[in-house]
Image (spheres, one colour):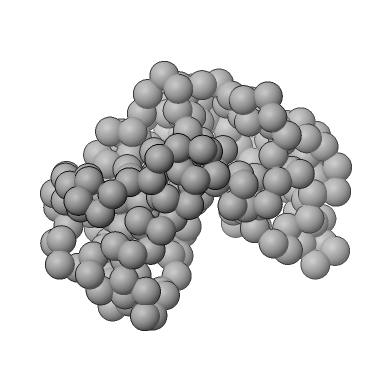
Length: 249
């Protein structure tokens, strides 16, 4: 399980998270919702280890192990995966090469046998078919010339192949039309399981129609200020965040 206690994070000496506490048990999907500037993406970046996001106080553990003392690659090897809101383009690096290199690097870090080229191609063809991706697209440089929906599918393809145990989805619905949203959500739902936890960061309830959360949390002014079941997302959609801002102040 993911356990975050009294977590404070600063970016360029500006406090963003201000005592955030959150537990995500194994097998559960928790949604994080909140107004712009609340610290939602900062939470994902800080847990996954993005440079520039300085943890100044508190603890973050995954399966009882401290994450804050590990670099991003070590966190990834422990099973932490962050799906970006805006996936970057990497010219000159074929998507297939990128994913296989990442997969085998993680396997080496865990002391596991690397995946052979034939076995990797078998896995990636099955995953791309499930996500309705053209396999030839994966021979192109990573995300270069991809549409917004294709970039998000590429993120889900990586998740399917890397099989992380902690998935952090940072506004995965951003820029997706309804058909792409369904396909991406189906890919995420296929990864749900008793040993895998998910943290879904979103502005809008519509994503949660497809990825059903066990719990919904409201993040405002750097803290979790309210928690509830899936019905809380519908309430937020109808009423907005205003009633929670005095609690966060």
